[in-house]
Image 1 (cartoon, rainbow over the protein chains, first blue to last red):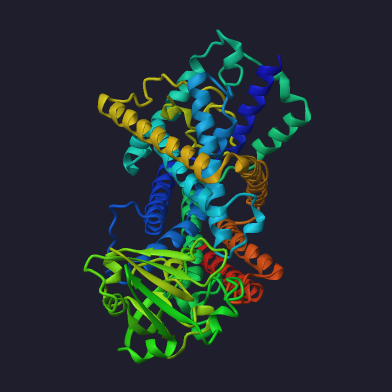
Image 2 (cartoon, rainbow over the protein chains, first blue to last red):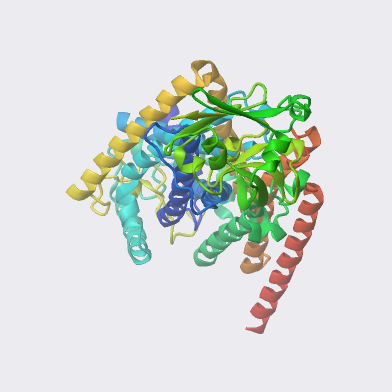
Length: 437
Length: 181
C-alpha cells in the first residue's frame, strides 16, 4: 500500500500549497511576460552571436549607432527581469510538482521530463548570464559562451513544446473574464468529479479529499497527519487582496532591479545605478574596460617605440608609425562601446578613418578587412570586418579617447572603433590591417 | 496531453481551507466536460509548436555536442540538478513555511499590513539575491578594477533602510485608512 500512501501524501501537499495566486490565470499572465523576456533575450543574443560569428552572406546595419548598445541593454535587463518573473511563475505552479499519480502515462512522463529540462536550463541560463556580467567563471565547470548559446536553443525549444502542451489552458485563461468563468467551471467540475467518485478504483480515488468512501488512515494519526491538520487550521489568505499583492510585489521587485542596474547600459539610468556590475565613467579615460593590457600580455609590445601599423592589400603594403597616423586627417566621432557582457558607454573617439587607410593601399570598394592585435592568447586577436563597416565614415583607427591619448588598457597605440559592433570586435592594440577583396 | 483541469483551480478557493473538495488532491478529471478540448485549429498550432520545439532542441543538442563538448556534460548536468534541488527542495519550501507563518500571524495582524510586509521581504530578498554574489566576487577579486567598482555592501544597506522606511510608512498609512473607515 505504499503507492496510495504516497499519493495521499502528495495530494495533501498539493492541497496545503494551494494559494490565491497559484492559479492557471497567474501562470498564464506571468507566462506571457516570461515568454516575452525569454524571446527578447533569445533574439538579442542571437543577433550578438551572429555579429561575432557571421554567416558568409550576412550584412549588418551600422545605424543607428546605438543599435548594439540597445541590443545588449535589452538582453541584460530582460535577463535580470527573468529572475522575479521566473520565481513568480515557479511559485504559481509549484503545487504541480506534487501531482498524483506522479506519472500517469508515457506522454505524461515526457511532459514532466521536458518541463524539468525547461526549468533547469532556464535557471542555469539566467544565473550563468548574471555571473558572466562580472566574469565569475570559476563558479561553473563549463565554458560560458558556448553553453549559454547552446542552452538558448534548448530553452526556446522547450518553451515551444511547453506552450503546445499548455495551449488549451492558455486559451482558457488568456482573457481575464474568460479566466474567471473557467476557474469557476473547473472548481465545479472537480466538485462533481469528487462527489461522483464512489471509489470503483481505490488506488486512484483514495487521494480525493472528500466525497469518497475511502477513509484517511494513512496519515490521520501520524506526524504528517498532525502537520497537515495544523496547516489546514491556518486561516486562508484572502484571495483578491493576496493576488493583487502578489502581482504588485513582482512588479515592484522588477522595477527595483531594472532601475538599480540598467544604468550600466543606458545613460539616463546612470544616476540610480547602485547595483550594476559596471558604472559609467569609472575606468581609464573615464571608460570601463574588459581586458587589460596586462591580461592581454601587451604591456611591453604596446609601448615599444618601434610599433607600427601595417596596412596591406595584395602586393601593396604601407607601414604607419603612430606619429604618421597622427599626421593624417583626424576625425572625431561619438560612438558607444557596447560590451558582449551587456554594459555600454558612449565616448568621444579621435583618429584616422579606416576608409582612408585602406584607400592608401588601393583597396577596392566592397573590400573586407582582417585586423590583428598584439594581444596574446585570445580568440579575438584576429578580427574580420565586413565592407559595411570598413567604408563607414564613423569607423576609425582611434588614437585618442575622451580628449586624451588612448590609455594602454583601451588599446594604445591604436584601436578600432566602429558603429554597432560588439566591444570584443573593437580590436585594441592594433598591429596589422589586411584588406581582403 | 494535459488539460486545464490538471491545474489546481484554487483561484477563488480559500487556500488551505477545509478539505471540502474545492481543490483536487489527486488525479484531476482530465476528461471532464469542462476541460478545453483542443479544436482542430489548436491541434495544428500544437503540432507546429512541438515541431519547432523539437527542431530547436536538436539544434541546441548539436551545439552542445560540437561547441561545448561531451567532457563538459557532467558539469552542466550537476548544475541542472543543483538548480532544481535549490529551487524545489530549499527555496520553495522556505517560501511556503514563511507564508504559512505569516498567514497564522494574520489571526492577529490586519491582512493588508501583512501583505505589505510580505511584499517588502520578497523585494528585499530578490535584490539581495542579485547583489550578494557581486559582493562575494568583489571580495574575491575581479579581473580589473572597473568590474564591480561600486560599494555594493553599503548600497545594499542603504537600499534595505529605504525599503524598511517605505514599508513602515505604507503600513502606517494603511492602518490609518482602515481605522478611519
